[in-house]
Length: 204
Image 1 (spheres, one colour):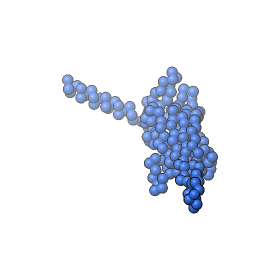
Image 2 (cartoon, helix red, strand yellow):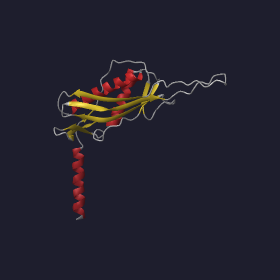
Image 3 (cartoon, helix red, strand yellow):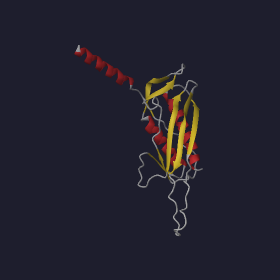
Image 4 (cartoon, one colour):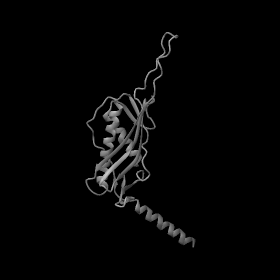
């Protein structure tokens, strides 16, 4: 009985490994012509929060009945949350005047601004679009007040260079065809559009 159990377990492991194989797809984000001067010199991007189905290496899609399913062939080449975070970071570094890096912050001086993106929907839909929706949050630390030479006067408060912002987003990019390749292309376009919206907010 024990030998049969072990054999069944080995078969299950083999089938699982076979199911996880397949070509791997990169999300190669297109360049943007947008250039803005950011209100902060530095910005840290916290790891993008994705739905559980989108954080998996398997490629998810919405079936005709509305259910979320995984493609039999094809995997993401990188961990989706990491890849999405790095794509947004790369875009903002190019689009804005700020030095932008992912969390954990790698530079000696702490970042002035912070960006937090929380995605609710991140999937190829049954309407033949790639939909990305959720919220993002922007803000910066309030500088220390200016202490006047005259100690009888109150310190002068200074506003935060980048005011707190909380934005909703809902992007839908048409799919050019079936399969993982068009999904990766549409996902890249959605990330570019989101980064452009954030870059404009960083300049306000």
